[in-house]
Image 1 (cartoon, rainbow, N blue to C red):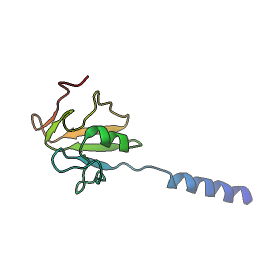
Image 2 (spheres, one colour):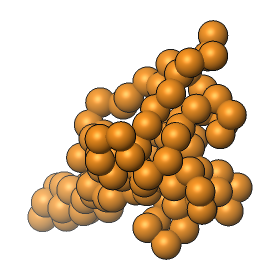
Image 3 (cartoon, rainbow, N blue to C red):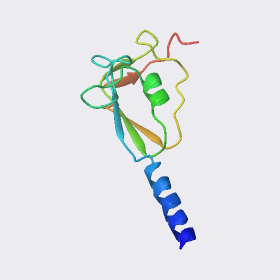
Image 4 (cartoon, rainbow, N blue to C red):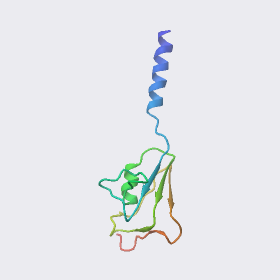
Length: 102
């Protein structure tokens, strides 16, 4: 009985440590890497910062319209994380511009 209780407790603890898929947002115009939390109402400013904050897999990063470049604060190359998808607002609407990056 003691073994079953210990095993059940261990399984329960594992469940609490699970990271669930979430949606995160960046917005070049209204976002902030200082006060943002990645939510749709309080997005981060840069893709680079957002990817540094996201852990786990199954997440989606939504990129609002704008140009994401070094002037905005992006660091290139932008390295995607396994298990994180990135979706822009549309072709010619969300632009990642690495011109001038080292």
